[in-house]
Image (cartoon, rainbow, N blue to C red; front, side):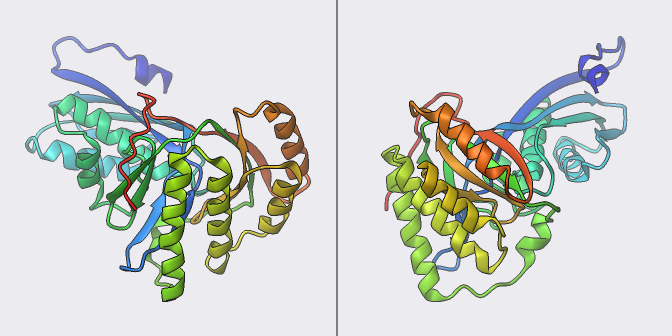
Length: 310
């Protein structure tokens, strides 16, 4: 892969190159269905993600590396076809994100692909345009938008921007296995009207907490969302992590609603963060599953970007 990224231009061949990147998310701060029937999630961006590099060749075939990233290949083909039938090139994806765990690995691949190919072809790669590129492919996390957003993942459409949070550390336990997010999102489930009303209230509560940089308020919402999700995709470690959170003073737990991950939220700016992190790791190491640590990400410009109005 290193050779592909550092390859020199070939003399006499019309080539252009472009790069793009996208962050992943640690599951979702909140996910559910609103009273109007809209399925939604609230993103939780992390520093890990996908980087894409695209070399355009007007006279060559289109290839993707690794070869199993067929959705990114299809997206690149669609974008190339908007400029005419000729042309191909090499698309290389380099991702930090585990697949099938609820970290938005597929969405990050697609957004990074759209940005790299769009840069070369001079196509619109604004967040709204990327939504349009991705909508025909699959339900998608809102990682094309900076910061924390309420996103209609099945419709692939932004609903609201909430802003950003102070830095957060997540001590995570992966309960194992893999989950096909696309197949999971095709499942039909009945959400009682009373529960949709609660989800709407949780969105409002989360918006207030994010706007006030209130990690305790955020943790109350994320924990409740994880509990509600137990009826559809139960996490066997939820009760244990909730007890650990109370014992070490963590704001709450956060889960991958369509994945295998569950984690403790820690305030990374707290004076006792290092000691709390050690305690959280030690407690989580005793649970069944694989331990890992994630860091939250902020938008490049550092601004809150909130446009939410309850």
